[in-house]
Image 1: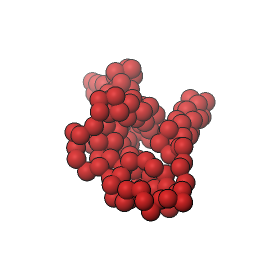
Image 2 (image 1 turned 120 degrees about the horizontal axis):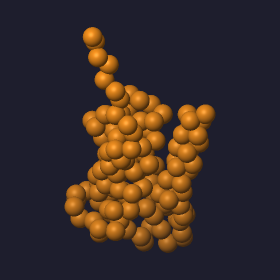
Image 3 (image 1 turned 180 degrees about the vertical axis):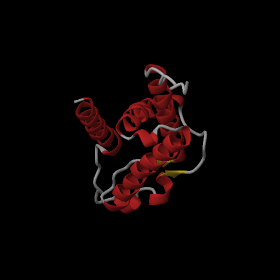
Image 4 (image 1 turned 135 degrees about the vertical axis):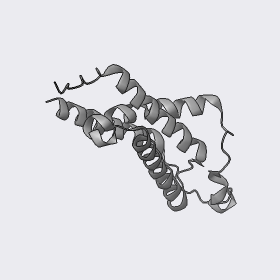
Length: 141
């Protein structure tokens, strides 16, 4: 039962993340060629971000750091969570880039999103570890 609830929570969370990161879509208008070139929407500079946006991306990935290890115990590790958080965030950024190139998603692709999402995943894992009781060590007497 607990696994089913966790799976449903992760699915609802994933839908919410897709909604927040992909919509609204702004299809290309007739004057699209007059807009900035596609590469202008890619931000490569770490640390060049407003604090509210950075904080919102951290908060957005907190549930990721909690729910993923609950469903897949092998993900319960700092390095493993960091990699999963970066990969999930990179997937979002890649879809945003594809949408921008094809229909005009008008979203920015930002290295700071990768960083803040990874931090959020790690903080979520830290919260999970604080909330779960530590396993009792088995003594070999």
